[in-house]
Image 1 (spheres, rainbow, N blue to C red):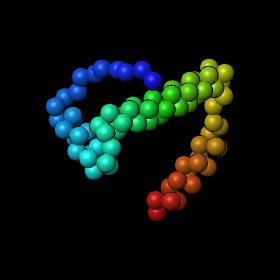
Image 2: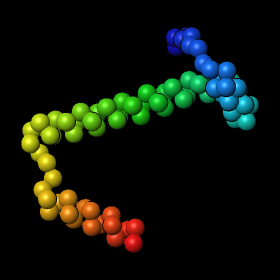
Image 3: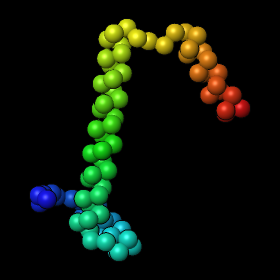
Length: 79
């Protein structure tokens, strides 16, 4: 495992310390988990965006009928 140094605003560091105490973990382990979770989420988000862009570039769009069907389904849930 590699060490990494970063600067945090005082308010964020205070929140991190408080959260670590409540979780009975070290601030470093809470921060490391937060960074791992963030990286995992952002990797997924970028993959999904890239896939959507590739579909768009290939001309693979939803038909007007597909859009209407999906819109109606979600509209029914909010009624």
